[in-house]
Image 1 (cartoon, rainbow, N blue to C red):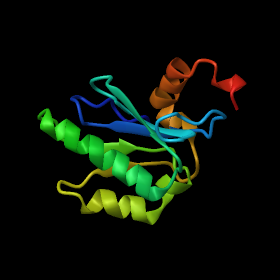
Image 2: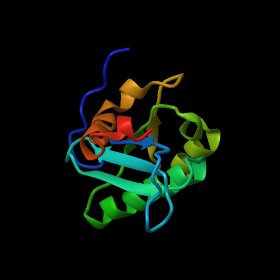
Image 3: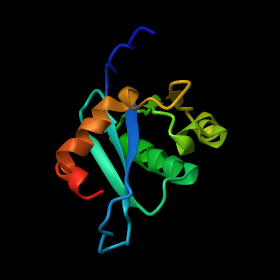
Image 4: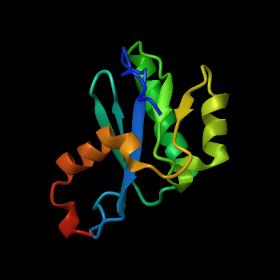
Length: 134
């Protein structure tokens, strides 16, 4: 398929991905996983430590940052995912559709990490030696 054009303004496309588990739990929460997101237009990248990668965690992550975007005058229009199990769930898409305004979900028909390459690159920056920690 043809690539979609880049988002023209902040909130136009939020690219999310998960990483982990990693070997050493966080001191604060005992988390061994991350969920992260990058706003395509602004370049803002955010992450959250989690203990599990579940549909409910992904939904809460997106809703949290949708609210933060709106507090800055942005509207989250679209979320791009790689269709990992929790993101491919009908419950995830339902939660995006039930939000006001609804958030479009972009995903592939199968698991496709290249669709979220912008966030995959963030993992390489914030966790440069993660290959040694697995």
